[in-house]
Length: 396
Image 1: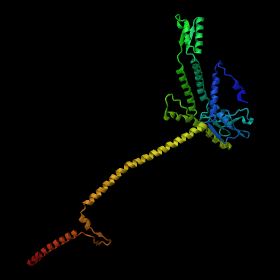
Image 2: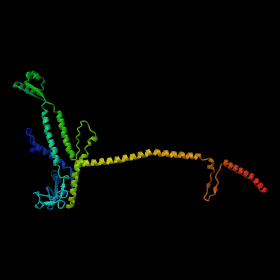
Image 3: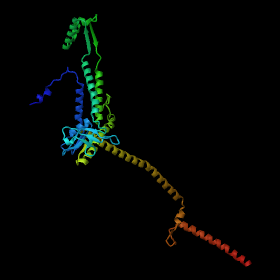
Image 4: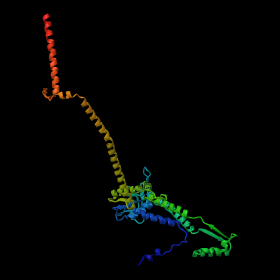
């Protein structure tokens, strides 16, 4: 048997029925709530707490409470109560669910015998956000529907007499059949000297529909961005680059990060109070976005490290030629100084042993001859001075 026996599939849409804005908004809201059921993934929830109803309470009511219903840990809704603390935060939570045990319906002290979990820090839930965007989407849907219907009429023809009206109707019939030449057969249309037939062309609605479609995409993209999903609403009719498509990445995280933080903080208290091991993390497209962000961050860090290493190597390479020039200059200076030292002094130098005696070295013959001449000259000078001294002593 096919699925066509379901009454909903066999019902016909009533085009003549007035549009119910409230029903249209509720339909939008429910579809978005169904999408948001895939935002988080819980691990370790007891069988008495279905994830879909836990998220249902948080998204719609903004908060719910973990309490014991007999031997079962459950979540339920309630109201804030008790005296506020020093930060004007209620200290009690009132549970009045008629379908829980009688002893469960009472006032609880927050943090002592119950744990309140919030959807966001102010426990607003997601309904105010959905109602604002979805109501605007419905209004735009209606406007687009009216513009779409009016686009069917490109002109209006008014006739003062029945004869002219019949002629115009006959003309429309011939046009529908493709007989465009029939317009010449209608005297009223051909002459129309007395303005008995008036033709008024309508302004084209193509640009209006384009603007309405862009506005519709803008509203949807704004809502998805609030919910942490990147939906580009760039109005450029040309292609956009990757930088332009990532302009709104930073605005995706604050709200959903706060939602995840509130859930994790509450579940830590639940695990401590009731001995459970419940964890929560992003799921579905939200999880994929987190993975992509982590990969992008790692790539950026690796690129930064590579850039820094290349910069350091470049600095070392730029500094290396200067060091070589200094070494070359020093070497040249050393060579210059070495050349200025007389060769005779180098060759006449003697090595000294540890006891201080001189060690003979290989001396060039020319140096030996010079030294011998100097000794001979000194001896002659001494011999010439000696007789003069003796004569002087004899005279005295």
